[in-house]
Length: 220
Image (cartoon, rainbow, N blue to C red; front, side, top):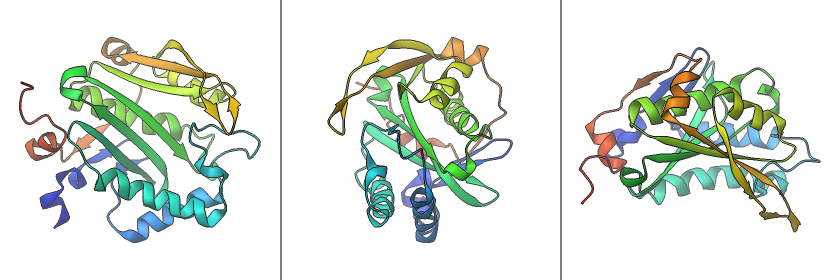
């Protein structure tokens, strides 16, 4: 089985309504690509630093599939991205990723996500981020988690505030030729513990997975 060689495929995060895991088949990757084509945000507002949703539908779908393969195919235990697909009732509805860069030293992760418009407004975005935060803090012993949201993305900012993040400065990236304001957010372990609102179960986190995440040995 693939999970024998890439043990991160054994990981499962379960919440009240959701399951987060890597896709088990190419068909699941294709299904999520179709979710993206159906719409992720208001066409008049770009919430991403890389405007991948601005392309033609065929390119959007292809980009979703290629991004997943790049995250796994370029795996580096010192600079990894876990591109968790988010499933509700067995159907993929979005992506919640979590990244670690030299995690053994920094003990810090960052997160990013998107969810199909048909599934928005139901608290699922908060629930899926709560799942990876639990994975980071309870499973990997992280000390901090970071995120970001562009001005105008009240939903993303609201999720960060409700989960206990604090404002952590701003950036001014250029997106589609326009200077944008990005609010940075930081969550400490203490603030995470004080704001936990979702029950999360972690399955499949064993020594082999930790080794793949660079945690199998102490940093030199």
